[in-house]
Length: 324
Image (cartoon, rainbow, N blue to C red; front, side, top):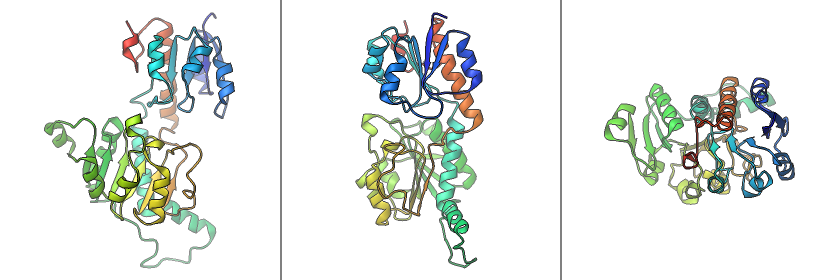
């Protein structure tokens, strides 16, 4: 029991038991984020950290556990970790890609269909007793079938979303830092467009880009103005990709028709005015929230962590340059 592992938030009993077979496990919290003080206290003297996307793991945290051997992130994204600093210190950083692709793509479509057909808005109306019955112009929405879908960021999840669009006979445009070969585009049935052209042409714009300093507020005032007034914005990627205040203004002024959001710029807080908008569906970061997917993520995060402690290269290493 010479190895000390700190898990910032309780996962699943099976995974905790797996970790306990290798060392002493400390759980930071059961059902909430740790405060900064709790995080710094919890990591003190630990050999390994299994953290959440909401935990900021920076130089201060690393200083608190000078013997740190691995940081395992329970997420695909890892912008919560100072990877540059970890690399300087020779600390492997890992993530959990692949396993949440399909679940997140499913939720993207749930939001898209919901906001286009006003399902949640109608649910609120029906539950409140304000529904007065069917009418020919009552709660008209937007056709999804045969529309144009613009996908911003064409990695695993973006491609999974594009595959689902085929069933709706949609024209699929995509924008990515790296363009596919003509053969790949033809196979997937997608058309590359520069971002400004995609925004102007798409009926639905779905964000799947990673969050980096370069993609901060990728969708802001100017980008929202380029979108059709009848278009919808869907974000299941990272909240700060969107200037949330600009989005609220665009929705209030009718610059776009609506939005389906699963992530927010300053989670769990929302930009002022967002919650009051009827034409927005707001999900509480449910992208990977299925039993199957979250369990797979937990097992992969544990395996990444234990691999390093065993002296083995982990399955998903973010900073491979530390592994000699």
